[in-house]
Every structure is written in C-alpha cells, then in structure tokens.
Image (cartoon, rainbow, N blue to C red; front, top):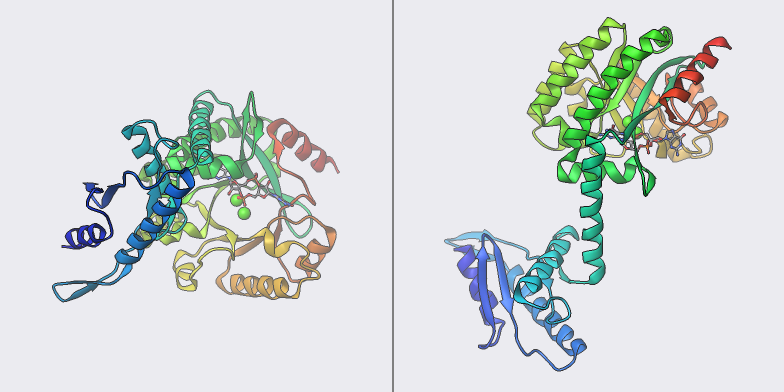
Length: 379
Ligand code: C2E
Ligand code: CA
Ligand code: CA
C-alpha cells in the first residue's frame, strides 16, 4: 500500500512524457527527457522536480487508518555529462543516491566526477588492503602502559600498514575502511595469528618479567563473529602459559546492537580470564546500566579529555567523575594520550592507576619495542 501511494505521489509531480519505474524494493527511477537546452538549465529543473518529489513523499501516509511517514534519498544523473548510455547514467545516479543516504537521508545529491573518484580510490584501497592482509604487509606495533610508579605493566598492540607505493598508512584510515567492507574479519584473524607467534619469541627475551598484560583492539563488526570469540579464548589460554593477561579493547559502539548477545559474549570471555576494556571512554553512548552489567575490568579515558587537563576545568570534572565511578565498580582506569608531565601529575594526584602516551613512548615496531623494554629494565 505504501509503495502504491508513493508511486501515485511521484506520478502527480511529473509530465506525461516522463517515465516512472520501480526497479525493485523501494527503489524508483524517474526518466525526465528534454528538460532544457543548457546543462545549467537542465540541472536547475531537475533539482526543482527532485525537491517537489521529496516534499510530496514527506507528507504523512494514512494506510488503513495507520499513520506512516517516510523520507526519500534522491540521486540525480544528467545525460550525457554523467553517462553516455542508460547503464552508466543509472549507475552514476545510483552512486549519487547512496551519497544522499550517507548525508543523512531525505536529501538530493547530483552525481559528480569527484564522487566517482572517491569511489574508485576506495575500491583501490580495498583491494590493496585485502592483498596486504594476505601477503603480510601489515605489522603490529606496541605502545607501553605504565603504572603510578612509572613501571611498565603492559602494552597495547596497534596495527600498521606499509604499502610499497604509499608508505605507512595510518590505522585511522584503513581500520574504518576494513570495518565497512568486512575485511576487518580477516585482519583480526591475521592479528591473532601474528600475535600468537610474537608471544613465543618474546618469551625467549624474558619480556614477561615486565609485561603483565597485552591489549588488542576489537571492532564492533568483529565482535559479532562467533569464531572470533573462540579464537580470542584460545589466544587467552595461550597467554596464560606465559602468565600474561589478554585484554581486549572495545568501544562503546559494540553495545549499540544485539546487546544481549554482546553481554553473553563478554561473560564467556570473562569466564576464560580475558579482561574486557572499554576504549575511548566518554566519547560514545555509554549507558551506565550496561556498564554495570558488563563489568569491564578496565576503562580507558579518551585522550580528548586528557589533553591539557591541568588547565581545563570541564575535562577535570569529567575525568574525576569517571575515576570515582570506576573506583566504585572496581575497574582499573587508564589515561590515554598522556603527553606532558603536567597531565601526568594532575592525573596521579586524582589517583588514576595507569598511563599511556607519548610522554612514555610512541607506538614502536617490534624490534624497537624489545630494545625499549630492555633499556627500561636496566635503568
Ligand atoms: P586507539 O585504540 O584509541 O589507539 C590509541 C591511538 O592513540 C593510537 O593511534 C596511538 O598511536 C595514539 N596515541 C597514543 N599515545 C598518544 C599520545 O600521547 N598523543 C596522541 N596524540 N596520540 C597518541 P593509532 O595507532 O593511529 O591507532 C588509531 C586507532 O586505530 C586506534 O585507536 C584503534 O581504534 C584503531 N586500531 C589500531 N590497531 C587496530 C587493530 O589491530 N584492530 C582494530 N580493530 N583497530 C585498531
Ligand atoms: Ca585502543
Ligand atoms: Ca583509545
């Protein structure tokens, strides 16, 4: 009924020579020939019609006495600039439509060359990343965590990608890409295999006298893979042989969907002595009631609250509240992104337990990290 009503509303907005078609699902295509003589003229008319349609579809629907409302995402492609044939024109209009969805729906987007460029780049990056995972062009780097006495207690594993042409690529760009197209699953599997081998090497260097725990990052997309939970448990058991605690860092985003499943997976991890840490704490949607049910062993205060904390009254209040809440629930607190002695001193005065940041060390490649730990031990 809704589809029929939507079709009717659109058909009222167009001329008799125009074509309205439903391509399937909730996707419609409008073909509007001979809109004008110049490209500008055509674009303005197309925009007007798209706007009228958008407004017409926004009005509430009465379907058998039930009220409905819907929004439309519109994409516009213009012949011949945006496509030489029907196939190309449709494909490019489709890209523009997805852009509208990404912009928050209920909007109109015209196809552009740069849009195609972005998509081409992403496609290229995606296939490069996929190869990089298979051919071991990824590395793990390590950043120490220290306690109040300045003693090293653990480290966080951070993925790095070295591409022959592009050099080092930051995880801030390839992790979100991997999350969007599912590559994060194979990346995560690679990381687990890789760390498993690393740990055996480290045992020979006696690194576990210093390192009591190792943290790895797990994205929400990975968390819903049952096999990942199994692999983590196997890895956690291996860690135990070296008296090493495995910590997995998750963001609050994990809690957005399937909360019951997530809580069950967490319980399973905890039953296997794996600690759960909430990363970037304070930036997401942390519901206090979930926090209580999840009982994470650790929370990491996002570095945006730590920066210049000794002078920022608002951040001081936030950090102090987090610290007192954590104390109440018996969770360890890690301050991320500690860069200056002033920040550290303020945090220590408030009794924050663990610190991580450039003040101590940047993330280091494995060899440098081992040297760093050995030097630290000798001082
Ligand atoms: P994150 O988990 O919040 O990691 C901390 C980030 O802060 C790291 O960036 C680290 O280099 C940076 N950092 C550490 N200390 C300081 C400091 O004192 N000042 C400043 N300004 N920055 C500091 P990196 O390595 O670029 O990682 C970015 C993000 O990528 C990570 O944020 C994490 O969310 C994600 N990521 C990295 N490796 C993995 C991985 O193996 N799996 C998954 N799922 N995500 C990963
Ligand atoms: Ca992290
Ligand atoms: Ca973080």
